Length: 170
Image (cartoon, rainbow, N blue to C red; front, side, top):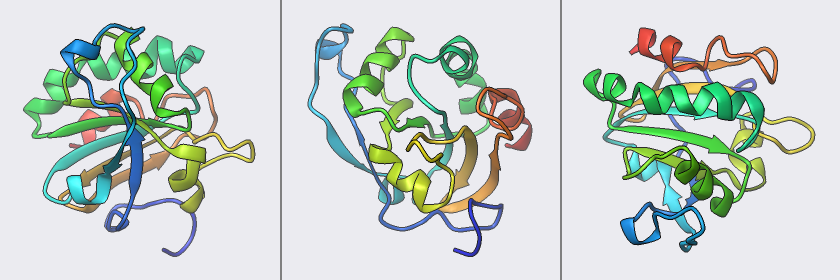
């Protein structure tokens, strides 16, 4: 892909694999650990409309106070606009991401908390920092094609990857 990042019209890359722990009722308590498995995003999302947003880390101020809670609150609006899957991505491991989903009261598999191990995916497109943290960005992927892509200008800014901006672009 030419240049860093994504732009509308790009294809979502093939063979993208994240790590996650599927939500289940028996593992619904925040102290219950599931087993991380691979999430084959390219395959899973090939025939779906997906909102993927990334942030610098779980349990951090802007991410925990606004970014994730606003997506959770507006999940019904996203679904009403035809979104099949909402996913949040960070460099944290799958255990941390799973606990963060539980801490936010998210249940089921409509809102996924995915790990980008060592920020491999985000680094591959130039959207990770020198410390190995994922940048804050938002993507809309419609049946394998990116229809919206934007990276925030600073780590603690929510202007282009927030849920209200994403809703306007659906």
